[in-house]
Structure formats: structure tokens, C-alpha cells
Length: 174
Length: 174
DNA sequence: TTGGACATGTAACTTGTTACATGATTCT
DNA sequence: AGAATCATGTAACAAGTTACATGTCCAA
Image 1 (cartoon, rainbow over the protein chains, first blue to last red):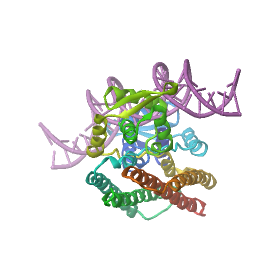
Image 2: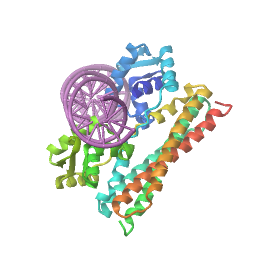
Image 3: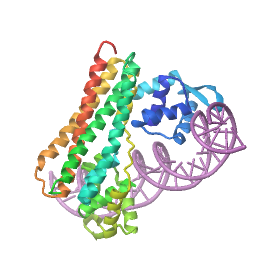
């Protein structure tokens, strides 16, 4: 049910249209919980029929603006306080490392270098977001900053591991 | 299709029964790609009918031992070389950080401390696996070690981020 | 002898992806 | 006028979870 709560959280921040939520997922929340428009729109309808969000207004191009209700606030706070996060992690890239031994040194190197270059560009993107607005006015912005810095640390750790793996697969024993 | 290739990779290592694969996912591969028995058994049947694995023998308790075929080896190597990993990351715990501002300082602290304690025990588990067998004989074992060390670095990075978040939510401005 | 781990399977359901489909508005 | 982006929705399918179901073997 994380998508449900990700949407509630984004609407707790401020009222948004479905499309604005979609863009918000692409830019920021989607780094922790990806979601496509075909998931978001039906879920918004369900949240609405459950009374956790309201449709505030319809705007140009038939856009619909949603706002969280009091019930919605109660629900997301309940979720944060009372439910344990699902700790499972799925990473295609991490899985592949287990099987690196099936590749010739050059092939393994190529795989790792592709990953490295992806992660470097992701890190650059995160860092440029961090440079954009260094002012931390309120709790909301501090929480966003914590999430961003968590992402940066995580990507950096993955880059260190790739470096170590590259040293290994380039060594004569590989 | 990662489950398919995770199974192929585990069988490229050595022949295994379905149950042995299940346990292998629980202990090690599942850290990168979780899978339950209700997913594994039907997928093994599909891999078999596609000729990527063979049923070697049936043992006690109707257990079935599978081995990868040459076609299976070709397929997993093709997957590693020619397909880009799915870079999407899903983390319920990371998502929650975005919404920490919805909680009172004490509640936020409690959430972070639960996460910290989970990650500390996970780290201890990884480190004890690392201490078990420090001998690296072949490529297969080196690859496994790289995966393990990647996991350790990733958990440590998350712990550092939790520490930073705890400092923040305990500060008077929160 | 019975409880627990071993061992495999299916069914119902939920979640997530890809493809299909359409209309509105703005910019060139 | 046409392309691009904004904006929302559904349908078919694939992947993943939870629950149901059953049989085997060993040890206390």
C-alpha cells in the first residue's frame, strides 16, 4: 500500500493535480517509489472514494486538483507511526554482481563501467538539486533534504562498490 | 524477468533442488531479489519447458534437482551482457523519510531508531558471513564476496543517513 | 506418535507495466 | 495547421503475495 501513502504524503505537502503528482514522482518521490500515470490516476479515484482526499477543483484541460482530507492526514500519520516498513530491497544491478563470474574480464568490466556511468550521472543530478536551494526554512524542507542526502550517500556507496569490483575484475586472477 | 535469471544464475553455480534454491534466496540472493516458493516452483517448471534447465533427478521427499543447460548458460550470459539493468529502486523506508515532517519529534525519532536497529542487526549478519570464510579461491567466490561487500557498504551508508536524520529530528528547530 | 523441518504445488488476489485511447492547450 | 506538452483514463498482461493444500522424513 505504499503508493497510496506516497500519494497522501505528496498531497499533505500541498494540493496537486494528478499530472503534478506524476511529475513529482518522476523528479523526486519516484527515486524511492516509482509510479506511472496508469497507477496514479486509478489510485487517486480510490483515495477519493475512501474519503482520504478531496477533489478541490477542475482546471484547464480537465485537470483535477486534489487535496488531502483530515482523514487522509490521520491515515498517513498512522501509517508512519504504526506500520513497519517493508524491508525487502530489489536491485537488478546488485543481483548481477552475484553472477559476474559468468563473464569474461572484459565483459564484466563493461557491465561495471555502464553502471558506474549511470550512477555518476545520477549523483550529479542529485548534487545539482542540492545546490539549487540551500535554505532550510521548515520541517518539510528539512525532511526533503534528509531524503536527498540519503540518496546521495546511497549512490556514493554504490560507486565505491563498483570501484572495488572494477579493481577485482581487472586483476590477473579474474 | 529477473527472477528467471536469478534462478539460472543460482543453477549455473551448481545443481540444486527447488527447496535449496528457496533457502539460497532467503540467505543470500534474496537480499538483491526476494522470491517466495510460490514464485520459484512455477518458474522452475517454465524454465524447464523452455529447455534452459534440466531435471537431473528426484530425491527423497519428492525433491527435484535441477541443473542449468547449455542453452541456460547462453541465456544468462546474454542477459548479463546485452540487457540494461532495471535501475528503478523501491524503498519503503526511504519513502518515509520524505514524510518525516508529518511526525512529532518523538515519533520521528522512534521511527528512525527502529530503522537503525534493523540495519544494525542486518549489518552484523552480513559481517558475520564475511568472517566465516575469508578464503577466495575462484571467480565465483570473489563475485559473491563483491556482492556481500556491496551489501555491507549499502547498509553502512543507510546507517550514516539515519544518524544524520536523528541529529536533525532531535534538534530544537524540528 | 507427534511435531517440526523438508518439499512441492495451486488458487485467489494485489500490484505494477505496457499499450491503447482520447481530448485540451500552447507554441511555432 | 501541426507538433509538443499537458492531462486523464482504461484494458490486457505480467509479476508478486498470501492463503490453501498435501505429502515425506526424522527426531524427541
